[in-house]
Amino acid sequence: MSDWSAKNPYMTTITENFILNGKGSSKETRHVVFALEDSGLDYKVGDALGVIPENPPHIVDELIEVQGWNPNHIVTTHNGDRELRVALKKDFEVHLANKKFVASLAQKIVSSGIDISMSFVNRQRTVITSGSSGSAQLLLPSVPSDDPASKIEAINSTTETIENYLWTRDYIDIMREFNVKYSPEEFLDLADRLKPRLYSIASSHDAHPGFVELTVGIVRFEYNNRPRGGLCTQFLADEIGTTGEPIGIFMSPTKSFILPENKDIDIIMVGPGTGIAPFRAFMEQRVHDGGGGRNWLFFGDQSEKTEYYYKDTIESWLDEGHLYQFTTAWSRDQVEKIYVQHRMKEHGKELWNWIDNGAYFYVCGDKSRMAKDVHRALIEIAMEHGGMNETDATDFIEKTMMREQKRYLRDVY
Ligand SMILES: Cc1cc2nc3c(=O)[nH]c(=O)nc-3n(C[C@H](O)[C@H](O)[C@H](O)COP(=O)(O)OP(=O)(O)OC[C@H]3O[C@@H](n4cnc5c(N)ncnc54)[C@H](O)[C@@H]3O)c2cc1C
Ligand SMILES: NC(=O)c1ccc[n+]([C@@H]2O[C@H](COP(=O)([O-])OP(=O)(O)OC[C@H]3O[C@@H](n4cnc5c(N)ncnc54)[C@H](OP(=O)(O)O)[C@@H]3O)[C@@H](O)[C@H]2O)c1
Image (cartoon, rainbow, N blue to C red; front, side, top):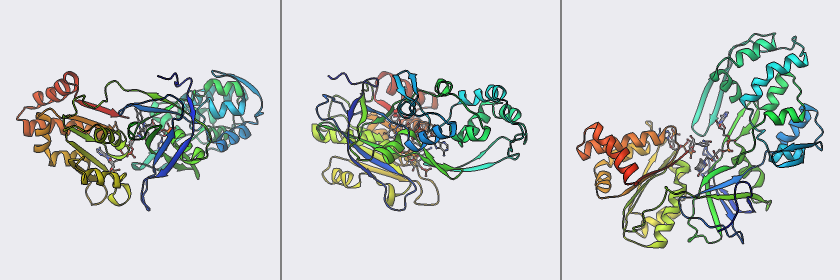
């Protein structure tokens, strides 16, 4: 066992980092490989990897410029005394603004005596954003045109108005908008500490000794003509690449999202999008370990042409009989949306037979929509093919399978 942790990460390098999507895709999903070298780090399938990102240098530099700070000024942080530029890059999240900062604006404009003749926009703005799951229209609050205090009050009026406001602005936007100046210490007191990001491991250590591999959906969006995005995913895609620069990692082991000990037990895996990550690892492990259990994988994403991640590997598992069934849901290859839960229901009778015979059921990927719909589909399958009423079906899925037998397992985020 090694002592690497979030507080004491192993500094390693990325050996492979490439886009899995085909040309013309609206998504950017990457396969990223980290070397474990002499770290002593080990993992089992189902575990997650912690990655320590850094803020993009262009945001750090712009922040320093907008505030007129001295980048070499020494500040005290939770990681010790540092130059301000290093603290902004490594210790705090400065790529997106937080609520605490917005709440501080009212006090700040009073104490700074901000010129209230500044021009403000007085209309409801609709901002179109495009994220991985399509476009969203967001209504920003209508605010008085010539009074910063009223504008800040309107922004801070409800959780929704604050969230809408923050959705399209970072610290630099807000500082420019209100022409506010903070001392480095004041700002760092408000900013969130930088947090590591977790990723479901997409490899079996037995199949890739000395390496750990991830499937990462890059978060990118744009507003006010400036490209923005997720801290860690952009760091992996744009900053670190395969530059050989060191990057901090640590293992986050799971106790529950594990393969059945008995290798003869069947497993059903539902992992659309990046949810495929742990199931690539599960499959590699099941192939390595042998055993008579059958493997059924449900996968889906926008289009077969551009999102069929790990196609060659999946086809070879099918050819060699390791993958008993591969059921796909390409959501945008036809007019109506087809999702994994629709495919589950189409195959409801067979799926129920597997579950009835003791199969493990795994789900990985989007927590807010997909996992809930898959859960509902399971209950409906138990009703339709298991002859249960809704209460019994819900009880069976949530109590018996999930809590007592621990064979309905989720890794959702
Ligand atoms: C156990 C676990 C396993 C995970 N496994 C994986 C995995 O295998 N693969 C994977 O890709 N991810 C995985 N994740 C998610 C991952 O940890 C990160 O949350 C994800 O990569 C985003 O991190 P980030 O730093 O790039 O984005 P952040 O900097 O954290 O930013 C994301 C934020 O951007 C906001 N945002 C998104 N779109 C817009 C927009 N259009 N306008 C304004 N704001 C927007 C979102 O609201 C969100 O708050 C996992 C999470 C957990 C907890
Ligand atoms: N917590 C975080 O910080 C964080 C960060 C990044 C991502 N995420 C989540 O992780 C998810 C994974 O992103 P991803 O790009 O890998 O995949 P994704 O956006 O979940 O998309 C994968 C597939 O799932 C489909 N889908 C959409 N809604 C669904 C539903 N209700 N039920 C079943 N399938 C559904 C999508 O179809 P359509 O797109 O055609 O509708 C697509 O075909 C994101 O959805 C996001 O919510 C979370």
